[in-house]
Length: 161
Length: 67
Image 1 (cartoon, each protein chain N blue to C red):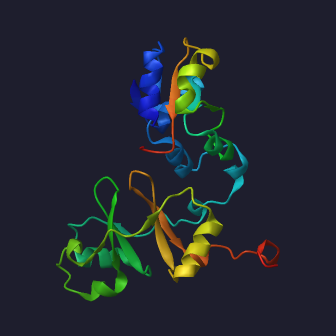
Image 2 (cartoon, rainbow over the protein chains, first blue to last red):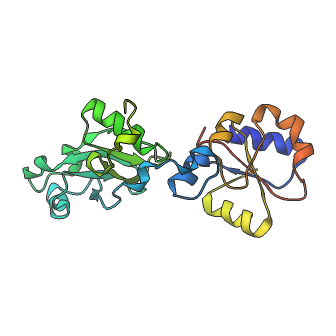
């Protein structure tokens, strides 16, 4: 949409026209301030663990095991930080020399950083999912959100009181 | 027209008094927008740009993401 707007402005005679292509999603993903009623809504980036272990698909199972520690999974990313898959800790008992690409689960579900914490918590509880990845609109990893890290709503916040 | 990233945008706002324009529908702007942005939905750009934007200053347009 913004490229069309930029070209429209050029056609109207504006000469200094720029297109912030990554847009509002990118701005919010960076944790920068916004204006409007939704600006104060707690976002999932506030609890995303950016230190989640990462590896490239051509690294080996042994290399990932060395850095995964107590984490339940590692995230496979390309050189640009785009999420390719995940590797659960329990499969790291396999042959040390195997490439991570052989054991990773491809195409994990990811969430955008502007999603509200309460919305994500409701989604995860409904589906019994304990954790999700958060990515920017270009697919690069922000971090891992654990359901246990999301504060429980207080009694006063409950819909049924 | 030049595509820019977040750092370019911050520089244009700080150093060149750029005008920031959200081109999404008004309801999305009203819910949340970038600081200092004005709302000119794409459909009304032709009608409003001449009245609301200064052609001597840079104009930065944005929407939600890579749409």
